[in-house]
Length: 546
Image (tube, rainbow, N blue to C red; front, side):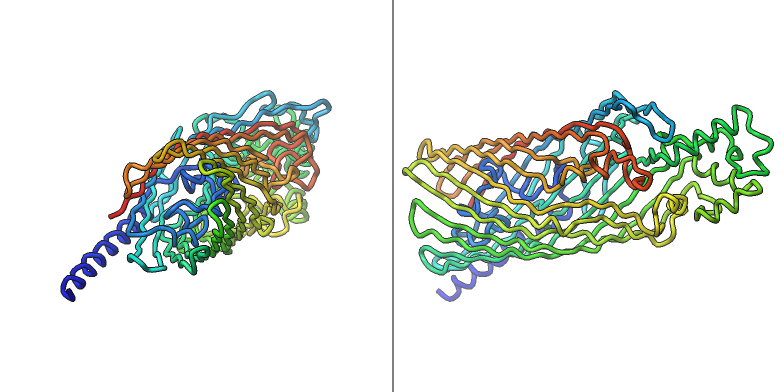
C-alpha cells in the first residue's frame, strides 16, 4: 500500500509540474484579445460575461481565482480549464464645427464634417512587444488548473487570464481624424500565473486567496496637433507680415518669415508624432474572497481585489514635423527673434527626432464586489452584484522623460512648466455599478444564462477623450452550460456592449477646450465631438477532470 501511495503521489506531482509549466508558457505566449474601456471584469470569463459579471455569490469553477477565490473550495478533484474567445471592437467619432468657430483667426478646421474609423485591434505579447499587424478581430486562449485531494478542505489552483485590456488602432486610414487623439493605444494587464487556495471552513462557509502575478504594458502612438488660439494668432501675423514672397525687413525683426513656407504656423497641422512603449513585467496583487451559502436558495459572496502602483519603464520617440522646427530656425536667424525666443523659453532648435527612456507610475485600482444568489424555485436562479473600483487613484497620467523635450520647450509660453514631463489630467472617478444574471435549468444537463450590466463610466464628461473612449455603456449577454458527463462541462457565451457620448465644444478639456492655456491636450479645440463604442464578444470553454 505504501508503494502504491508513493507511485500515485509521484504521478500526481508530475501532472502538477506539467500543468504549471503549461500555464506559464501560455501566459508568456498567448495572443490577447482587446477592448476599449476602463474595463474591470471584461473578457475575463465566458461564464461571468453571460451572467452580466454577477457571479460573486456563485463563482464559476477555476475562474473563481479572479471573481471570488473562496469558490475554488467548491471545485473537487484535479481539473483543467481551457478557454477561447473572440472579440471585435468599433469606436467612432464625428466632428462638427459650431457657429462662430475661431482659433486665433483660423475658421475652417479640416476635420469638420468627418467621421473617424475603422478601428482595428492590437495585442501585446509579453517578452516580444506589439506586433505590427492590425486585426479586425482578435482571438485568445487562456488556461487554468485546480488540484484537490479527496476529502481535503483545501483546493489549489492557478489561472492565466486578462485582468484589464484596452486597445484602439486608427492606422488603417492615414487621414483618420481620430489619429490626433490615439492613433494607436494599448493598455493591457495579463495575469501570467495566479497561485490560489480555497478552504472549506464548514458546509456553508468557504474562504480563499489568490495572488495574480501580472505583466502590464502601455503603448501610446499618436499624431499631435495644437489648435491653440495663440498659435492661430501667430499664423495670421505671418500671413499679413510675410505675404507670399517673404519680407526683407523680417531679418531685422522677429524672424516670423525666416522658416519659409514650411515654417508657417497653422494650428490645424500636425506638429509631431509621439510613440511610447512601456511595461511593468512583474506586478503581483492579491484577491481575497468569502462565500457563505446558508441555504440552497440563498448565497452571499464578497471579494476584494487588491490594487498596485506599477512603475512602467520603456522607450519614447518624438518625431517633429517641419512646421515648428523651421519656425524656430527662422526666429534665431533674425535680429530680434533670439531675444523673443529667450523671453518665451523657446529652444534654440528642435531636432527632427528625439528619443530615449521614459518612466511612469500607473495605478491598477483596487476593486470590491458584493454579490447575492437567489433561487425562488428549483430551476430558476437570480444573481445580483454591486461593483466598486477605486479609479479615482488615477487622476493623472504623467510620462517622465530622461531629458528635456525640445518640442515641449517650445510650449512653455502655453503653460508647459517642465518639458521633461508630459502630464494629462485623466480625472477618473470611483463609481458603483450593478450586474444582473439569470440562470434557467432547462434540463438536467443544460442551463441557460442571461445577463445585463449597465456600466457607469469612470471617466467624467469633462475629461472624455478619444484615447479613453468609454462613456456609460450597457452590456447584454446570453450563454449556456452543457454537462457532457460527470467530469466534463462546456460553457458558451456571447455579449454585446454599446455606449454613446456627445461632447459639445469646450465641454472636455482632454478633447475640445479652446482656451489659451489648454493646449496639452485638446486636439479638437472648439469642435463638437460625438460618437460611441460597440463591442461584440463570443467565448467557449470546457472543464474536465484529469
